[in-house]
Length: 483
Image 1 (tube, rainbow, N blue to C red):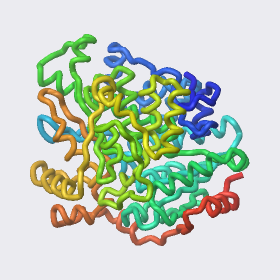
Image 2: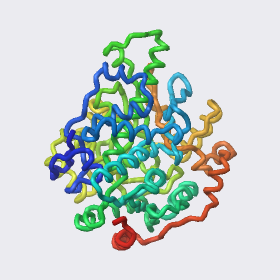
Image 3: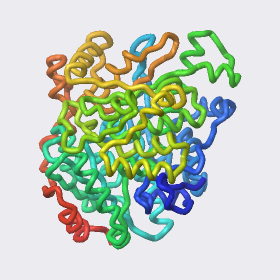
Image 4: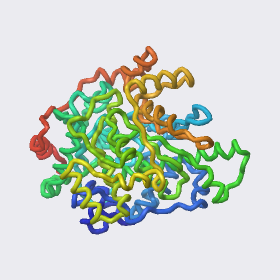
């Protein structure tokens, strides 16, 4: 398997090479030359696998230059039950006949980002050791990516982490998780701006080829394809378990290709930077029986607007601070990968259209809008603060389950897209412990924090505050980078 750039200016490269680069040399995002197809027989053979074994099979279709025994070892280390809440790694919780929560927040930072970051931490250290080199990660976070990356990479040999976060735009718990770390290879930088400003700084600095080469700069944001393919795994995991439940309800033991294909499910995905749901898009392209991929946004609903109208208008400085802060994003980096598919993988045509976005501030694909649902399976919706509060309250009252605000956005939008006979699987985003203020508003009490998490909130914090200025970030990296 080789990888190309969405913008056409990159020679085909293997997985281990694009793993270390992040962005393509021409500023585009890497995509596989072709999406691997999984047969019904393969799906059936994966049914009894544990999570690490399934990850080895799915990721192995993309990371073909990593020996299978080494990949299996990396997946076992990443998805060790000791790091997660149970041997299941990703438990499914059925709320009722229509809705099921996919439990993605059992990892060390209590957020779905752990699912990809734990693998990325393992595979990065492996690839660097194989090459005898070092890497300095430059990333941006709206809340959960930063802590997941830092916990996965803390203390890793040959890796430095420089994580940009927006000053005053994360929850108290998110700040504590990141800023309390004292590992020498972890550097937290709070930028005077919103997440989009942080993301722009990352792109500006990584677009400086000479600086990037000199300081061995890489990326762990969802632009890194290793994260995308690691996230594909839990779509297969969830479908396999949901299809088991469907078969049981039908009293069926039929495992024929036709029977498996008929057991379609839909997924609702709380979305900010489009990486998580793009992984679902690839799973669908690989042959997983997914009917709908429902994208849920908060008040920063640029993506809902795009899928509803076909017009993409990033809002930049108009990004709102909301009660689901990890989705406070108005320029979704991974949308580039989807638009590339809309253009039939024609890099020249895509690059010309994308230049128009930079020039005009919008990308008009309204003529293609019908394909978003009919060909690609997308639907979308917006959830507000009032929706979040009402959904957290209702989910607690009806099911005895407390959810975080991002998962509440997903549940609120999911209910608008239910179809008879099609289970709706909602991807959980984080534990509610990380967002106590809105939980109190919804149900009158905050989640009870374990003693270790309470100590985390009280620990000293270590962060460097900077202006929204690329030179300020460059100077920090130049001073502290792992050589």
